[in-house]
Figure 1 (spheres, rainbow, N blue to C red):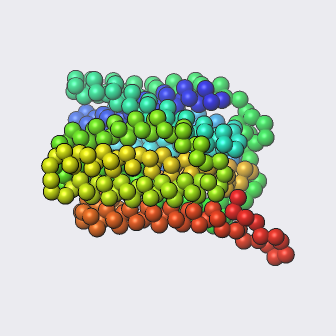
Figure 2: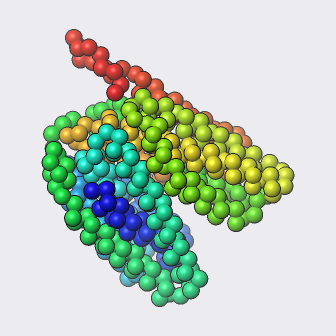
Figure 3: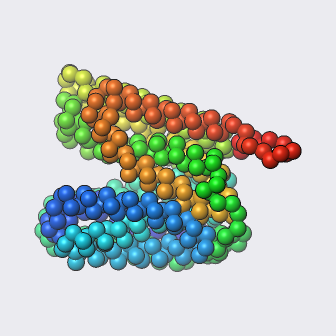
Length: 399
């Protein structure tokens, strides 16, 4: 199972890396769309992705996560190929909604499959391993896309997008080999159990994790804008810092699973990780103070190291809670809620990050870091609280 998921992740994440690097230029130079149209279209598609991430969980419980994963991957590959025929804004928005929506469905189905196929620490361990594979494969895809960017021709861009579509289809081959597991796993539908929408603890944990997940866009949106517009560091520092983050996450994500083996340790991990994110915010702010380029670069390196460690630890703790607090009978619906929360956090992050840290400097960085720490403290409190018990029952600890 792990090997199958590894090869499928290699294919899909390499395609993701290609699209990350060439999509913006493809839409403007090949499809002839304006940057404003691209921005609005992707925003609409991102909002739709939140809905499909949630809906995918129910589909996984009804039809099985493997089946949903296969259909969504096929739809995404078709949408990527359709980009090559897009020439107007309406078509672009429709195709983008399918592409982004299908990718969201895949993420939910992927996690739902892990929730059914593995138990205990193995689930978090496998997810950590797959995240390493994801990061390395995205980097490989970005490297392949660099050749396209150097060539810069229309045919090169079209070839890159079609290659991404083919890679998504290749991921179907190992996925089709996944067996239907016993005990509610694989493709076997499950519809019993409680709804996550009535589980206040799970919804609260999801909302808190959505706040913490803004740190992803802090790195990819906030940090580049801050470095190029508010520090003395050379612009190339941005690329080097992103590489440093990729290297640290790839090296330490699996190791971080040793820190988490139950719900209380997950709560501690999330809280400590958010303190590291606060330290990162202070490091970014320090880089903006007048001084030499050397001071700015050193401050930024320290900040990204703290940011990467915070990212690694909060993700590991968050995965443990998302798995352990889900009703096994409705694993798809629960993971759909979890993934929708992450999607919401990432959707609002650009506005939050740019209007606080980038726009206001130190006060904004402190506010953003405070939000992370507050979310971490709230998560820790959830893991130490006792669950409400029914009348006459013994109170149940927060397992």
